[in-house]
Image (cartoon, rainbow, N blue to C red; front, side, top):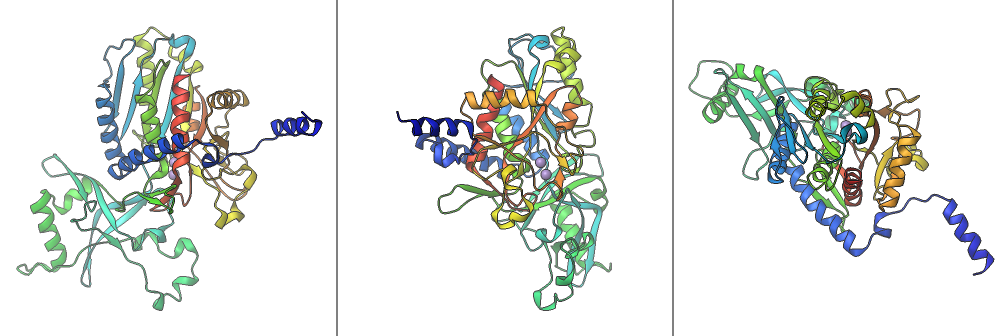
Length: 466
Ligand code: MN
Ligand code: MN
């Protein structure tokens, strides 16, 4: 071998270069990747809210032989259990054969809530031929994006007698959808001068709910009267029942392949279902593992708050109770445990290059993105994983040929965002953020690459099994 070739090889080994999945994957791997995407699209279409995701995941777990766990239940090695928290978050776990105090647990945490438009508790409002529903948006959205698209209505209503009515309208082709108005360009001179955040105000996000008059009534709001009649006949719901309801409008569009080569998927809720689904698959399929746990939590989009968000003590209680079953000290087990905080990141968008620092951005189709830290500005609110933990995961992924890359959200001074990582890390569990890069994150119809979805799945499987 000549000297120049030797030097070339040496330099190539010294330099780091990201790889495109479609450049390095075999035909068989690409086929597996595309097949995985088909399963994922079904999940995405069926799980537009955390409650629906929770139910779907429980069914997947049951099919895989998991049994329900309730506090106080006895556990033994090899047990496969699921724990449901208030129908909005679910934890799956498998008890391994290894010693909990020595090996700890392997956790993967993802969230199953996504930005959306919630109904207000007193939503009905009739005006000039319309009956509208007032809304209060959930999570960080660009409000103008949620106008003039088909919306479906999902959720639960607790009615007068205390029973629960489930609502899901607008997903099937033969059902009506709902709609938020925007202004025609012909009359939008003043609107178009406003800043993006003011193009549509929160109080303009009113949902078109009906327009037919109920004739035989003396009350004034005749369209509302007609709508309430329909609601009562179909669902047994009265206006006052909306006060004890959780109803949200979400895009009714189904997930679709994008591009002539079908490499991308557009869908509602890739944040964070594109991490939740691989995390669920990875634990259902985990073989010869330590004790593994998948946390599918709610309320990440509004700060992980409440009794179903990651800040709730229930997740710590669950770990403690598993430990108690095996006479292991929870604090020892947590100190030895590791967690992947599985949440999406922003993919580098060549059309908005100015907000990204390309060297440290996740490039689409270049694999699952590892984020040593998230946060904003001077790493505010970041969990910031240790070099040791990143080094360990890096070696694992490289040894097992997982396609991965590192990433930051965007340029340092431009913005930022957080995940559940810091709350898990706060339990004294080493935690690393990683996830699928997303284009148009938090839009009603987000975009991901099948390659990155598949890499996330492979990464989670490898983490669980090694
Ligand atoms: Mn997220
Ligand atoms: Mn988000």
